[in-house]
Length: 273
Image 1: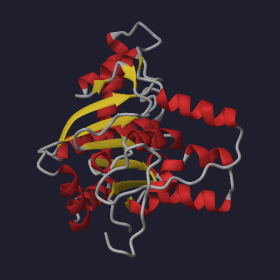
Image 2 (image 1 turned 90 degrees about the horizontal axis):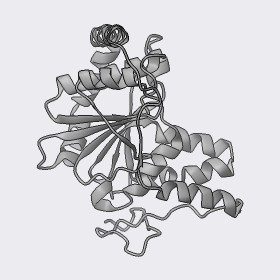
Image 3 (image 1 turned 120 degrees about the horizontal axis):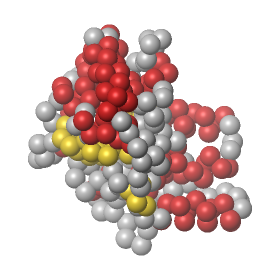
Image 4 (image 1 turned 60 degrees about the vertical axis):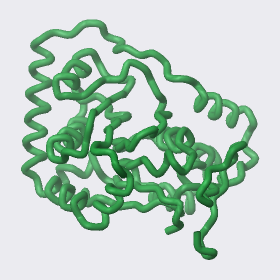
């Protein structure tokens, strides 16, 4: 790494190789009990999960499926979607995608926090975008989905759409043991931080493509609004900022603003930006 490059250092017994040392921001003087609670949450193993409702009927499933197919069709014909695809296929972003995928033919897609597709429009649009990406790009492999709010009807429709619904809550702590696209539009900051902490090594971070809330926006917010609780929950987000290449998407259309505003693609590299 060039002498002018910033250096990162991990608070772990075995720091990563390749000169990538990530220094986390110093903890403030928050109450110890709060830190203990956050850290214990991060360390919990995946908890088994099933929908709280144990009944579904063919009519409800059919109605939701038709609604989803309508949203997919609407999104596919939109200018927003065309601009989204053009961005992915741009030379600069394609280079980053190829770097992450390496010799792998496909990137697994993991969707966290999609929300209730039965109750709200933004989750339907977000899921429609993921489905269209899967159809469009041969390099996207298996799609896994999890949100604790999913109903049995929603789970069945997701399965019919070609997605696998996880049976346990990973709390965002999936390790990227192979190239993985994490699709997380409008998730809470703590979930992004969980993901980063679980992958706080060079070889793991290098295998992540992350679509979700803009890290730059998080940084700007904290720069003007000092909030110890937010700072604690976003420690890894802030620490990785200098080593993140971010591509913001254009979501100015009124039809798609609620679902995708302040969303970006993120790629991580040991070379400081």
